[in-house]
Image 1 (cartoon, rainbow, N blue to C red):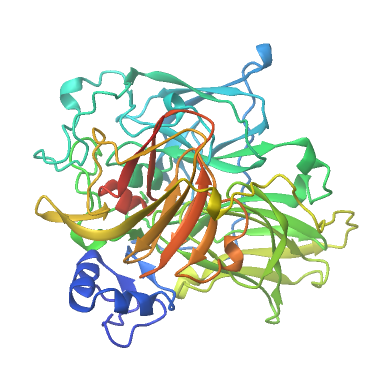
Image 2: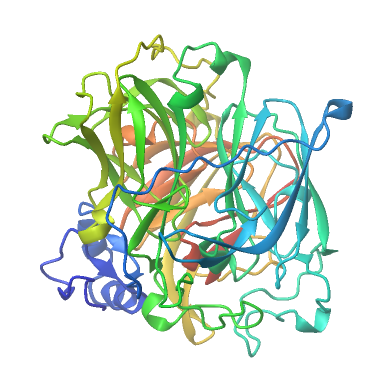
Length: 542
């Protein structure tokens, strides 16, 4: 096991609240003590991964203004479809003041530009790959036909990339976990992704999903927001305009030359996938970025604000709390989850959020004195990673927004008795061809193998069991959380989700309906390092 970033050793006994668990420790812990110890861990918030330390001076918190990602304009709106174009290219940006950082980007920015669309109005996004490696785009949370879902082997090759340069798959000399995939659809330079968007209004996000290299590609900057809107939500009277803030939270670390530090075995991301052994459980950074800025500050009115929060970190978990300068905690009123509005609001003081989860919350600054500050902090962080961002109360203002008692009436009402199938899946560390891996049901990912076959329209209950923290994501569909280890769901489990955080030793039941489209989809852990190390499985909808 690794030492904690503050130098405190991690031991099986005397586990600390901020324990750091590497894969070697995970395997040893499971072998030595079994799930009983894991079950005890489930009651203690912990972090799965190891932290990089930046080699450049870091700025003080709450000095850099919060950037708001630009909204991308369509190149065409003809024929009932909005068409967009995005170029994936290398760029540099001043993330830390006075320091230039090379990035891989969508349209030259990190985060990439935000796409805003309307429910039921299809869009087509043409992605052009000018990066030095193949890419794949996945619209996370999108109800998307399989051909546009971003399957990890459906690559867009850059100009000059030859098939001979492709990694041959897990078990090869490079150790990649993807065997040859005869169903892969590979295109050169550009690809059109079509999204019907026949789904509830919500915050989605798009990111790279290339097999074996998702984690470093996202780390280098390939992530952006996509907001789906509809008339019903527009008419609720929620905070809007300048009082609706998208917040993409992500941790990073910086090398001495200002580049983003990442422990890749092959820094070119061309052949050998994976990270150095100390980071096999997940890569954590020591700088918290919000919309690409370190510990930013944003001026607000004495009014309600809608915070649309995404955890875009590779592996870091957060427990968010809004605290005034005099120590008072503000309510975080949750109005939405991954897949849109809740039926009714849920009030939190602490809000846990795992990788890829989204929470739609209202914070009311009306009772905070002008000139003072509200900090958004991470209760699972330590040192610099405890701070996330701040809001400076700049002025008095009128506020005609509201939080209705009833937010939505279109949530699905699936019942356990509707399920035609109950399935069990374990998410655990294990051995993979003599090496460490992260496995689902004891198996590493293989694109040539169908792991689950479900019928279109069927309702199923899935039981998910974890050894350490695993945020589990289902492509195509949303689901409801039915229980956690036989107990009722937690308050933050409300609503329709597409990613659920499994805690160590925990068994979570979810219910879903496989609707929309037939084809090959995925479910996987969204700890991006776990995902790259084979913690994915195929879901075939027939």
